[in-house]
Length: 104
Image (cartoon, rainbow, N blue to C red):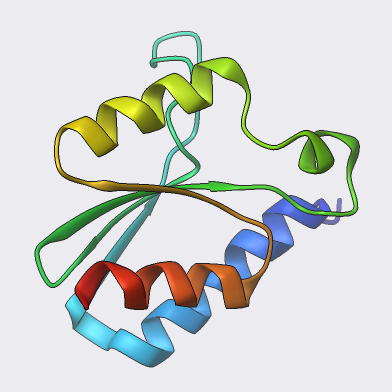
């Protein structure tokens, strides 16, 4: 079974991030389940000590055009309030730009 468009985008983001930042970047894909917390971002990252929560949306899908859900936005608000960075990324370029902005 082939991976969906969002899964493929996440893979490309992870490769691009590791290519650019190497061991300076830790990226964990959060897999939601009945035992996890609703709304947690797709990618949890640490770059040079900066925490980022990245919600990935493929722009060509219905949910991608809607952006973050209310639960995802609430999680993002908590991350921002704690001093981290929350972003919704629609492309590899968005992801790399978000990472760069976190360390500037």
